[in-house]
Length: 438
Image 1 (tube, one colour):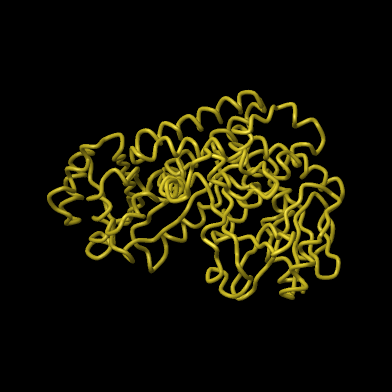
Image 2: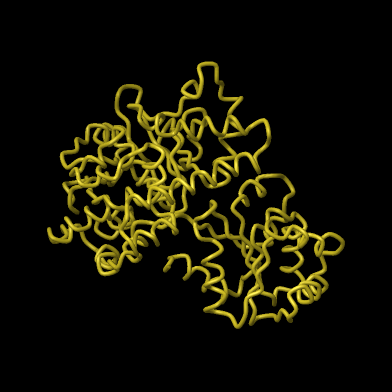
């Protein structure tokens, strides 16, 4: 399956600044597949080692972190030489071996001729711990579920992807393409971007089987809670996870701990929530006290919304039935537009790898997302319908006077004065398109 991260892996291989690479991402987003495919296509051979499946591999790193000694032992274990430059070494589930993680420092300093990529579904949790590895000795990449553009490739609609990517002006797309893209977007909402799900859908187009695979993925996450999370946080993780549809179904979508149970307090659940963030399963979007530069300086850490890593898994958790797909635009409007917001978060995080925030006035105005691009601040409203009102955007405009106001809806590409409307299917072009137009 074609993934956009592949080009980043090629750039890493040829970079003069190449260091051992850490690939982060939630379980089942395709890390192992893309690394093995990269190794098969771009190297002579692949040396694959999985520290979760083979815990005894840790012994090769326990007594010495000297790279050449490690390579000799691993070559003997694999019964073939591991060669520099031409072989790709994959350390999978590396979070299971702290010694192997620390060895990357020495490979960088003493034996950078070996090309090493390491991955792990719980790597974010491991790296959050102090002294887990030497900072500055590795390169990082993040892998997410398939974006809508990657989904288009997977279902044989690469031409429509190119149409979106080649857009340079706010000129509406031809109506037949606009309608077809909305239909594909509706399907993406239901299927989501988990590689196994997308692969099956692209081959069989069976929405009921899609649900079965999504349920299996969710069950595997729940098993991870019990297997890998701190014992005291396991029940809290389950409560947070199960509450996400209800949290997003509220009018303001603000995460409220009392939804978990009446006596719940933030300090009791913060570690569990952080664990979910570090595994890549949820995305936190904080409230801004003010929209000034840099945005991170104006964050209210106590007020936030929580979104799921994948829109299809959110539909599964919310028990949205397959027949919703044939009921017009109902799917876009469910949960007071929560699916639209979750979709937008997923796309922007995947494409831009940056922090998203939201803003609320003292009164009733609320802008769904605030995005900082270089030294510019872009407000963005995400709406489910074709008759959006821009009251909150206009209130924000009056207070902060940004150069551009952005909105993403089911409407076609257009701009009206300062307001730029991105079709939801083209949100990947935010905010570059107005920068090139104005």
